[in-house]
Image 1 (cartoon, rainbow, N blue to C red):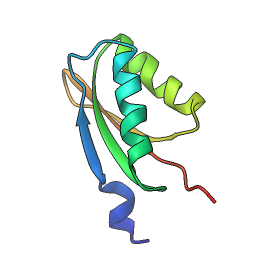
Image 2 (image 1 turned 60 degrees about the vertical axis):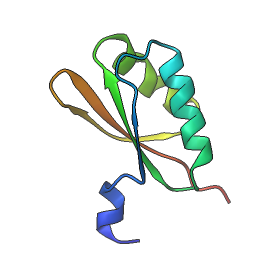
Image 3 (image 1 turned 180 degrees about the horizontal axis):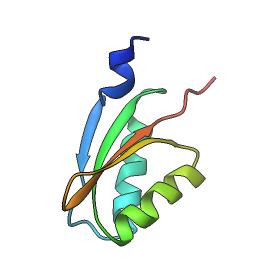
Image 4 (image 1 turned 135 degrees about the vertical axis):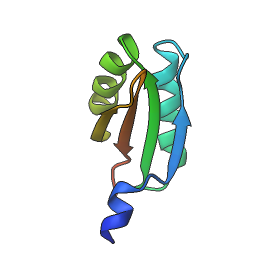
Length: 84
C-alpha cells in the first residue's frame, strides 16, 4: 500500500446539517458498503456531531485516523477495519 493511499479518502460523505444520531447511522452504513481497509472522509458540524460520532464509530470498531477543524465544520477520516 502506498503512502498516498493512507491519506487519500476512498469516498466522502457531507453530513453537515444532519442531526445525531442520523449522522452516525449514515456514516456506519456508508462504511459497511465500502471494501475492508478503505478510508472515508466525513464532514460533521461542530458541537454534538463531532463530540458523539467519533466515539460511536470507535465503539463500533472503526478506526478514526484524523479529525481536522475546517472552520465551521470538521473533517473526520475513518478507516474500515480489514476483515480476515
